[in-house]
Length: 278
Length: 278
Image (cartoon, rainbow over all chains, first blue to last red; front, side, top):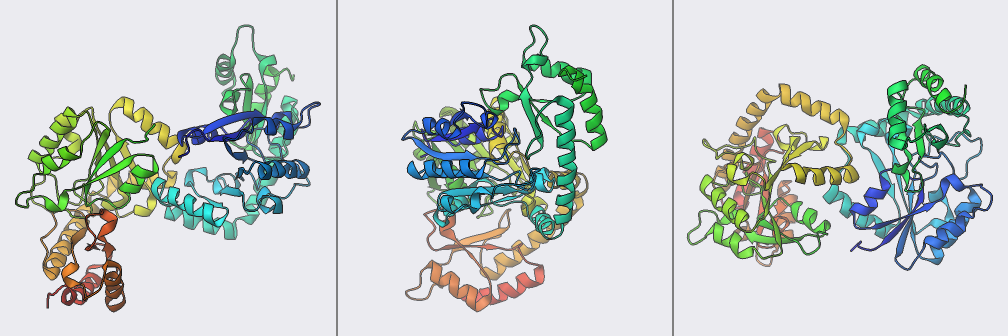
């Protein structure tokens, strides 16, 4: 049974992962992590280590990270791999944004690391790389014995990915490399424009800016009231930070790839003054 | 938690339902039922009643039934509805074959019954009616509060049906009524030809014949050896009855809609002598 098994979720995290863990009887353990990377006094390895108990079974790693756009460095990946080995944890690798890295030099993907072989199970999706989230196609790989269990769950949960979408995905793999390169360049430009307009650091990957919006709140305003005001005055829907972890009650997530560049520029021009950028 | 909750599966049943129940922590309770309907001395209501304990939470009803092609009569449905009410059971209605009924007069679908309102949750699929199982599209309806829980599971399990397939399904609903009527007539003919060729009763619905193949076994042959011999000598793959319940160790399932009519006739001509029909 999965009951009482703790899964460590470095936060902020992909909003669905908490419920995925909890709905299978696992216990999600949130560890503020991605937004702290590089901050003075923050020891990311120690932060994860403190969360591990003898009930811990897995560590979820999503690099590039939704929502911060941060990448796990080679050194930090090695440190977490040592932790996982010491405590015999599975590593759940989420490669949703693997093709959307804007940094010049990116560390190798976690699933290619020798020090994670035998304990990492990795999920890829066509949703982000190929812009077809509605197709519901992806793939998972990992150690042979673990994949037997994954196939068992798949059979009784979804049976298979929709076949027409599998055929589309196979064609995307063969023919859409050029599209992905163009999209990445367009997304990188959108990332730079969004970061500049709102005074945020340029994300290393993913499709988001994630930052504390508290300085922009009006007196007495909470996150929901703020998001509602932004929506009503600008037409832009920002995502509440609490969906990415309890530690982010005043953060917001902006997706800079959900509209064409000209619409993004219009949105940024409307948002900038709200965030004190005239 | 679902742990130790018993779900009653009248057998023979759709091969996937047992694992779906078990993989969520439920306890599947098999009750030989569909193939016994109408047999002297078999009391279907008493058979289900005997399986109910205070750990029972749900009764799965799939009419037309995969694999027997049997329908639940109006009287029997009323008796089971009384049982469900008395023991406060959910009824899980599986309408996969709702459009594939060949009997002249069919009882009303379970989900339309007044005596099941408030306790029946019903799933429909486009897989069988429209021949698009690979599209992975269907829908579920039931009491308001229960549907909140269903939506929660959906969010963290599949998120949504693939959008292109939803669009195809919507178009099928609007435009494919004529196709369904033609398919039903073609399937009804296939059902009659298959039943006649193998000396079985004509199924009232579904796409299967289901019968005990033991008389056709050679000395020392078990089900797997028999199925292998049939496959190797005729090219026809029959499904093992044990997939539909522990009570069917020598039964087989034949799907009469998986090939065009001329291929079916060729298969039946090869199968008939094996089952003693020269």
